[in-house]
Amino acid sequence: MFTVAALYHFTSFADPAALKPPLLDLCRAQGVTGTLLLAKEGINGTIAGSRAGIDAVLAHIRALPGCAGLDWKESTAAEPPFARMKVRLKKEIVTMGQPDVDPRARVGNYVTPEDWNALISAPDVAVIDTRNDYEVAIGTFDGAIDPQTRSFGEFPDWWEKNRDRFHNKRIAMFCTGGIRCEKSTNYLLGQGVEDVYHLKGGILKYLEDVPEDQSMWTGECFVFDNRVSVGHGLSEGPHELCHGCRRPILPDDKTRPEYERGVACHQCINETSEADKARFRERQRQIDLARDRGEAHLGETR
Image (spheres, rainbow, N blue to C red):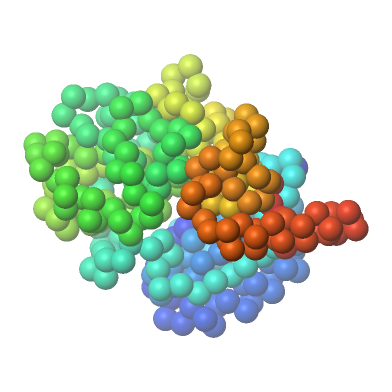
């Protein structure tokens, strides 16, 4: 079993680039894989490895400036969920594109998974899913509003167009692990919304803590690794990825006429050009050749 740790922390890094080499070196030395993002506003990412390897990397991150209070969520995977380790420098650790948004200043009211059902069942509460459309498509909370955004950066524009719908409503927001809601709740507070709440620890913590027979969650939760989705108890879900569009698909979707392994699915068949599809076919051919040689290919995921 591989330990998977999803983490984020907003803090001020004066020189994120200086933090990258020792962090990457440690991850590689410990056999830890995944992706970590560094920016002036903090750190974000998901990593996987042995128990000892994850502990070593988490100890290193907690020792970074302002990161002593780092929180993270753990789950397990039967197979390696990542092919390699990447540490990337970014302008934002979760991209919203709003320079005035600063979760370090203030955020909405945290709601524990145990109290979440009562909040979102209240008649004066509007529940908003802040994730991307393809994530919402495979699972969400009962009655939640889907903004149908393709990226988090579209959320402010969606809010401006729809804010009148939420007059005299309390707003409850949620996302996979909590990081998007740190920014979206700060954004709404800056827009003059007074009663803003968000699920502490995100969907992952809710699925871990709330028994399935008491849950208001329907479907699976998309995760950004080779498991693709998880369900209650953070057990691995049935979804796979279409490697043409990186959206989740079910095993039955592979029987549809639009599906071509590594190239396209029913969701993206008309979104890519023939030149794109030819490139994807060549990538898949290289993956198959590497597998036949008993080697791992960097482009291969579940």
